[in-house]
Amino acid sequence: MQINDISANIDAKMHRLEQQLANLNDARERVSGDTDAQAVIDQDIQVLMDMRAKLVKSRDLAWQVHQLGQQTQEQNLRIRRHRRLGLGLIIFSGVALVGLLIVYLVAF
Image 1 (cartoon, one colour):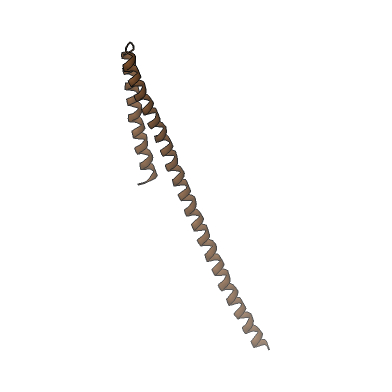
Image 2: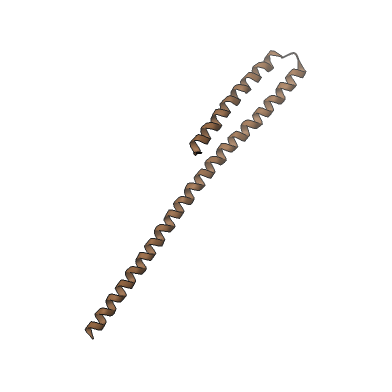
């Protein structure tokens, strides 16, 4: 699953959760005289708020993991480039050394 899909999924869940919170707040206002019902609704609101905080944290963690993955890929690419450059320099040095030996042997 792509990070954008994960983020969109979490955003959709948060939107539904926000709707549920709005409905619970409306219900709380309607039962303003019944303290037992208000207590139950307050508990439900608190549970939804906790879920919302966890969803936000999950989305943030997903983006952090994604960014760390991208950084790791970039580092791996950089390491491969440096390895190829080093190998190329070794080969070039070897060819230059053979060339110098040939020139030295032909000259003397």
